[in-house]
Image (cartoon, rainbow, N blue to C red; front, side, top):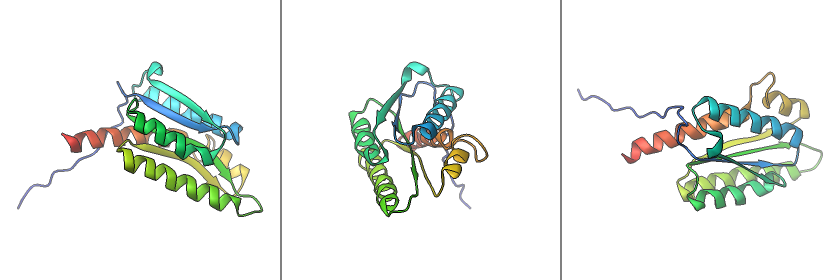
Length: 158
């Protein structure tokens, strides 16, 4: 019987350079996500000087800037934060779906982990719950996932 080898990333952000790309649309929600992500990164050992925050107009613009940041090779991980709240038109479906696809493509094409912290909710109340109240802070969750993926990919490359 052979022994299996298990790989798993860790939540250690020491010496990692991380970019946070955050939308200004629904800024009152996104600001809480940014605070959660920065706090999580610092708690995992990151230095504030190694964290950059880049603001974009809305969730639609997140993939383009995330892709540019990934391809710059200046960052070990990129964290995308935004809030798309359903309205009365199909606009939500286009923005949310294309944002997710674009962020996935940025990660896959560059090999740089992209933490997905873009809320897609039906109501403002749901968004606020996910930005630091009842449902935790999805910005912090995205930061933890991004750091874990950096460490996991480094193990797989070794």
